[in-house]
Image (cartoon, rainbow, N blue to C red; front, side):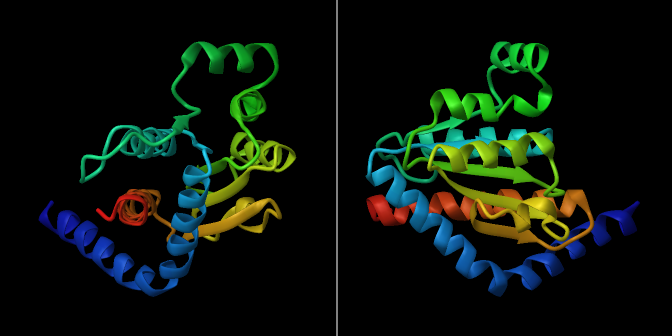
Length: 192
């Protein structure tokens, strides 16, 4: 058992070291995009499935409430929260429309979509990016492995990819990236 624990910890440390330099630019670009959006009166929309849905909710909570400093609330919506909306869309249309339909209803020109998918191939997240393009909403793709279809999507403004085969390690790095974004946004907007 201890070997399993040790391997998981050391794999995580190694992945962080491998990702540090390659992630500097996409994280900086994402923070700049999100700060510009928020300062212009826009909002961040976030979506994903499973663990990525939890990450979307976590990120939005940090923006709306606070991260490490007390500051004004920031405009952000998780598209994974409303079970009635999601199930009605899935029932009346299709599950692949659960995020795109909400973007159609809630998204505005100048907003930013944070699209999270460990594989980069989630059909409903890809459809959300398609809808964001139609609404003139910038998209940030947060992916793993080889980035999947999201990494190749023309509608993605910034791609943050964790090139690892393990979903667990990718998701650990995703939450690290999201926390870094919270820090960068707070620093840029509030000097915090």
